[in-house]
Image 1 (cartoon, chains in turn blue, brown):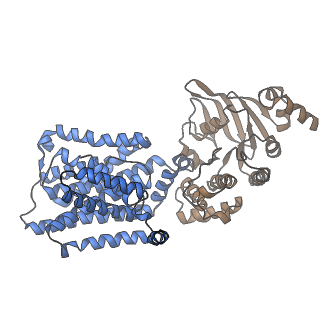
Image 2 (cartoon, one colour; image 1 turned 135 degrees about the horizontal axis):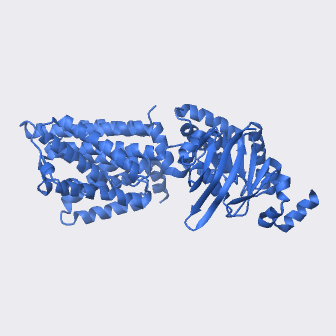
Image 3 (cartoon, each protein chain N blue to C red; image 1 turned 30 degrees about the vertical axis):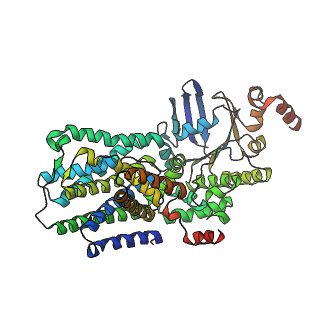
Length: 312
Length: 249
């Protein structure tokens, strides 16, 4: 029992896995970022798309995961253990936080979730002994493998996080929890009146969403070897997944993953060609896409486009 | 008849407004209680307070032997208190079937989605919405959405069912149909508290009437007796109605 769009998502992920067979170091770097973006967007979609809560907390959990894994690896934890621990910790923390934050709705929730990253950034800045503060944190290199071997390794690490995220999203979408989140998005009052514990459902969703974002943050930290607060708590990590989800089609996991790839493609092309004004050009492109394709890529029906073209 | 619901000294205040003032009320099993009163009398607030949406500031509410004064709406729902909303509250994108399935699924923990959908189909058939089962709730007419609310409430297997103006906005044929459904439910032994403005329906269906005025019950008794009570006539029905019904009576 698997919908067509879920199968398409898994096919897309499988296709990405073949990248190291054909691409060089640059392609692998892009591929790793693609997997990172898809992970962030798919995770955001659980809270933002399924439950309809516009969360700006992605940067907070990304930074949390990066620092958590970084600090643990500094204490000689193996990479996988550090990443798993950061994911698990983020999940617990987010579930507890969600029980408080998700009582707010709409704009109020957005602002509250936005402040999370700022709070964590200040905490990291001031906990100098543990995190190195504003000086940043060096993460020990994994054994001296070749550049290509390392690039391939981190590509697959990020790919695996993305695969797990996609599996989580597909499982949630088909479960009682997914049904509950769907109800909450449509009518939260009515959901509570039919016996749904809305706070619990939203908190679990928030926790699941944070878990994989933090794991991706952990892989990122190990990949780049050096993190500092203004890098990993960058507000753009909160905004980008939302743009990707909107571009791809809110709520649909396949659409959201496509949105992540499209966004990365745009970002890369614009960055190369308009280095001076790249943010401006990217911004205009995003606005245009959202204006003319408000329901994202998934709303495109090629048959209908064809008919419309014939009429013109 | 044993007691299902008892309110003792229940009050609720919204900053400056005393919406409910020292309400004492008892509902017996199997009763069909009509709750009437002028606009702003506190009828809907009373239902909201019992269901935990706007908890009481003081007083206690006993339901089926346990204290539910401080329960949350979802807990009240699982205990067997269900309601329809005056302003219908469907899950707009869901099909009619999934709307009802949601009610069956979440009100009885441990139900599977499949079982919930099967139960939902029966409840839709009961309210006559089976042909619309796969239609999104947003596309249903108001009368259909009102019946959908009823099916949702029934899917929760209520011990006590609150009907908040299920007939408002319906034409007379639709009212008749809804009234027949309520009769059927009462016959099946579900205890009903209904807020209703159509006196014809109230007199036709209810076994007892409570009149609320300024957040306080001013009359309580058999329908015919209550509507000839001078205080009720003064507060709600108006002299004209009293004369007319006396003429008929």
